[in-house]
Image 1 (spheres, rainbow, N blue to C red):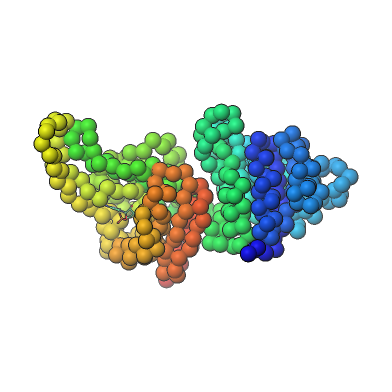
Image 2: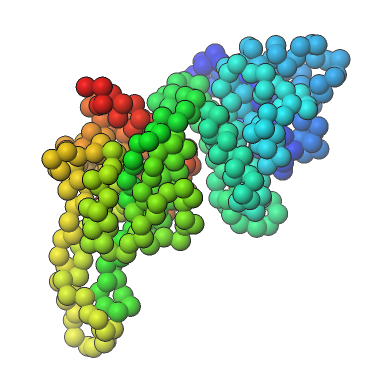
Length: 410
Ligand code: C5P
């Protein structure tokens, strides 16, 4: 059944190879009842023609600030009637312009003169994405309340592999429609990012733990730490004082956070016990190993023909410990389940006595760049549709802010 959204967006194209995906994106959005007005930079026209976009959308494409086709006040008129402006693809250069409020062509002028949400789908080479200037600009857009869609990691047009690839048209269409439908994700993300956690102390666990069996072997899991680090980043953006207790990961240190590196669950537990008295909010994102070897060997265990039996002892449940303190901080847990996600998550929230639990499917979440979360709290469940982990983390932290502030008012 065709869904009639009755929304109107401006789809802005800038000059990147991913511009070819914008044609399919326009088609998918229109199929779902979204009216699409395309605006292109001059550079975008080198990658895909305005004629293609015009044929797909049935509307003349806006390109030139000074062109006769547009009304004299195109920049104001066009953004006034839009429910959102979506830039896809957004190049590093265009993102830099947005971050600094430049308006030297029609599309950047439209963005500056808007009175509606702005969504940006970055698309660039991995080194351009990783560059400190781009990261600064992206963080600035986040602070300005711009919704960031992607990028993701994968094969790039230049032949390299890495972060910076634009999301696929289907993924973008799904996220944009979710945004226009006012889901919890859209509401959380469209709020202007004030420093709502200024002075609030947030303690976060992230990554896997490693439980030694002998000098060289151990028990661990495939957690990359990306979700926990993204949550730390999102809390920092809102002005929180963040302590990040991290198991072994390959991620760069989070700037601005106090990072405590640990290896085993026991070390993570000690670090949490040491810092929890100073925490207003505790977020347990770490995939803590449930068991450890009863008697880890200091030497490498020698191979033999006999069966080797490892005795395992359960590890302490760090989150349950924190939640059961006489004066616990506001506690948030994660649940990675491989089946019966909703039932297991609800039971876990109850068992651990925590106000908020974020559930995800283990096979989709662990180690991946993207994820999908269902938040469970006293009000019920809130779905955060599939997107990159930083976007999800920002939505999760916005939700935490709301519940934390409500709790303080009681
Ligand atoms: O019970 P389960 O391991 O599925 O619970 C997951 C949640 O509990 C996560 O928030 C995780 O960080 C936390 N946890 C913990 N200590 C453990 C096991 C899990 O803090 N030993």
